[in-house]
Image 1 (cartoon, rainbow, N blue to C red):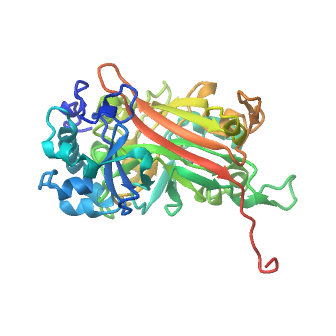
Image 2 (image 1 turned 180 degrees about the vertical axis):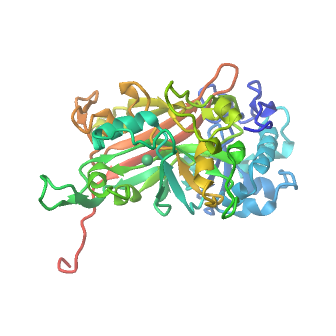
Image 3 (image 1 turned 120 degrees about the vertical axis):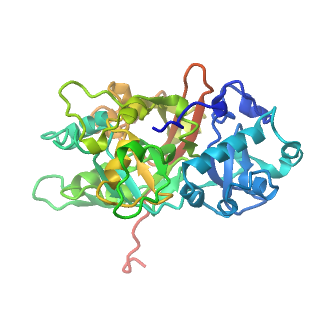
Length: 450
Ligand code: MN
């Protein structure tokens, strides 16, 4: 945290927008939020940067062309089809942009032209196509949720549930960037090798039988540290630009067979979903909390991971929810059912510690890189944030209101993540949603079959 991470006029709960839907107390996108995303409309199919406000998207490319944005903000970033260039400008630019957009959308301070040209500048969110926010060059997935590490470890590696290094190192693996998608679509059940039914036999091959989700948050850093330049822990939080929801789809059977000794491969690389909106770190300032308290007896982090300000306010308080809708539920017009809740404060390592650790060896981060926190489970049975944990690896299926049961996900199942921050004295801000519906595995077409 730096001294500029303070509540300012952009967080004032009394502010109202002339976009009326943004003043609804239930909206996820009040004027105090202003998340960034990439969208297009049927009238203008070129992807461009927008800001969510109520049920509308404010078009920053148009705003720039109408000279509504200050000339001190670099023009070219608003001509891009991703957020990479804007993110490369760093946190101070995002903060200037936030102040300016808040003033443009504020009922009191808005310029007349914004209202007069509203038909050009706004598009209804539900009529827009959303895209992956950044061109993801690199994707890293951490394992910082300690309740998940314990619960999943007890099921996958009972002899060693919490690895010896867990309380010393923010554990991570390099994920697959090419299959990161915006969470709004279909997810195809992967094919792969499943563990042998008994020791000594050959593995089975076919569609994954233990398809799962992992409830995580993703975050974006401005990058630019350059090879050989670690980011010190005291600065590591400063350039984290924003957060989104992240679903690290997981094929548990494939994972169990393939993961030793180098970690997950095909069990994760088939798809990772992110929510289309990036809620900026500036919007989240009122919702920072202390890092998770380490119980007595846990080691003190090594110096390069320890910063007083980060310990005091490097955590983040986001209520998270997972909804499931099955094909049968939808055919009966039944609403999706909430199967679990959690909160981002259950991370053993802060995002700043993840950045400091990620770069301590000199690894360079780049603007647009995506970092996942790891599955965020909580301490209670209702806060286990994957089907693996929630059903004890399938042993205790979840009962649904229509009497269906689920251990792992079936074709037609749709999983939706939601996230929201609330605190007395501040406007509540939401993250939108991250949704995926499972479709059946495509058969492999071999030459012989053609
Ligand atoms: Mn994960």
